[in-house]
Length: 318
Ligand SMILES: [Zn+2]
Image (cartoon, rainbow, N blue to C red; front, side, top):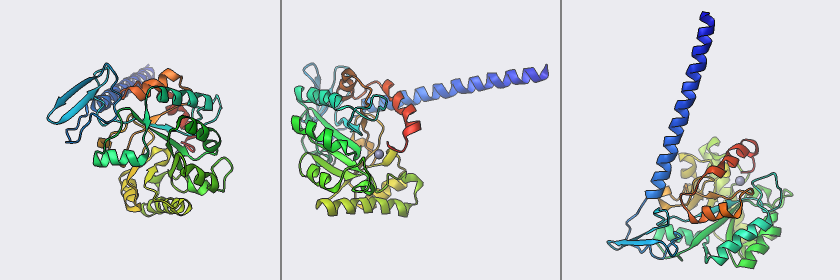
């Protein structure tokens, strides 16, 4: 009897513990969303020509030489830019990390038909660091890992819509591994509409490396691309989106100016230029989900459940 009572207590306390955890998570995500949606800056530069997806029904509120833009939901979109994160562009129905060319085409058509401008990372950096003016409707397109389908499938679609984007490549795969881009493809892409930047040498989990080894992979990948492409490489995407304080320091020491994670919502310079958010675009999304992600900085994260589960099995490619 005492034994049964003990087991019952154990089950009850586990249940209460799970409820407590769930409540904590909820309050954390609400706080995080709230701080994203109300963040405002009061810098002197004009915000009337920056992103924010203010449409015809938007409200513009000008105070003390500073204009704050709100979208339909009353969310402050000032300074926020959707930096979209893709990986492979090919059809594979059971893998959300692969967006089919047909879906990508539909998404790019939506952006073109709705007057979006694709910012390069140089333009994003100038906007975040110097307040340089940018068009009202902006989006940044990024593609991680450097799959060969970025040449065969993505490149023709971007050319069709006259858009530009960035590919973060794993330099150790170049000319070495089959599903990845070759040097000659990199050169052609980089000279046209796809800027090539670093995703480390071997897709290392950076926080697990010593500081010295973090600097090494970050410098080596940067140097490799600078030699191949005859240009400065200044931007980085952390493999798996993982970083810690020493990773940020290593990225700065290696000479990068901005670095991107794999999580978060729209990007804002208040994120810190070395922990910039990106918006995940999943191969399972329909067009409406895509539209929500590029028009609403406080979009619902319900579809990220795919990433959470899928990430458990595919950690090696994110
Ligand atoms: Zn990756």
